[in-house]
Amino acid sequence: MNQALEHLIARAEQLITRIEAALPQPLSAPDWTASIAWRYRKRSSGHGTLEPVRHVATMALTELKEIDGQKEKIERNTRQFVEGKPANNVLLTGARGTGKSSLIKACLNAYAPQGLRLIEVDKADLTDLPDIVDVVSGRPEKFIVFCDDLSFEEGEPGYKALKSILDGSVAAATPNVLIYATSNRRHLLPEYMTENLTYTHSEDGEVHPGEVVEEKISLSERFGLWVSFYPFSQDEYLAIVAQWLSSLGIAADDIVAARPQALIWALERGSRSGRVAYQFARDYAGRNGG
Image (cartoon, rainbow, N blue to C red; front, side, top):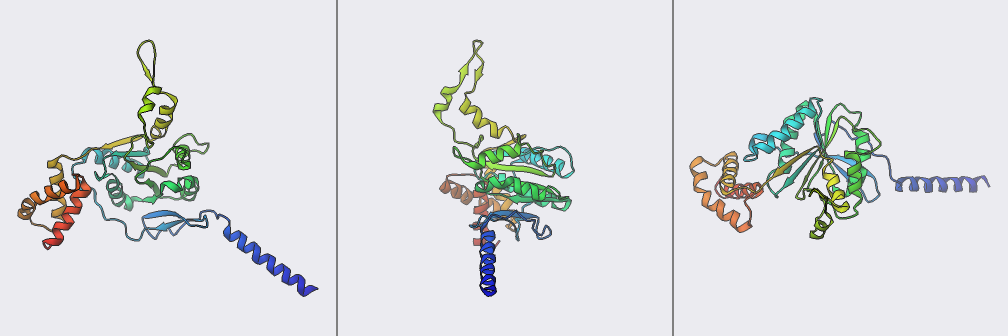
């Protein structure tokens, strides 16, 4: 009888262990000395982890050309944040490949020695933002929660989670956490022509947006700092090409000679973005011994 009871207890303990393993676990703190950047990942079991980025991109602020106005705003806001002064959550919007993500990575490298850290979170995992904020809230470092290429479709759960963290949550804002997000949509949600019909006009001609438009604007308005990026002109594109070629060891005379090829490269891709300039520079340097 005792043997049967012991066997039953052992089986029950095994079952409880398996059930506990399947349940979502609280997010645990990683080894904060392992890196200056982490990625938040959620496993199929539902467990979330902060994984260190072993090889952080070595982007420097001086390498980013033709976006001086945007660079000044982002760097100033980041410096205020690191120094413990008031700073804003940031939304970087505009054309693809114009340096939005690169600028954030460059700021990380510039201010990591002063305690700046970065946590990259995918859109699908934004519902776990409160857990991430709780884990870092007691740390001495300053954390940028980075959401790259952010946009939402109607009804996505991450939309409301981000909205609550930015403003309007019962919990107070955490002074060592800011949200930096990049997007090709200024208001982060798709906009349709029919929504223009929801605008109303008062007797004195003042325009009032309808409820649908108000809802879409409400998230982007919670970012205190908006920074817009624009497509590059031909001269700006060539200046960026020259900067990357120089950084890859190409001589000045060869950089001038490469200009026609750089223009053809951009024409074939239908874009004169900074990303296209970087890709051309790597191709050219690889072919020409850089």
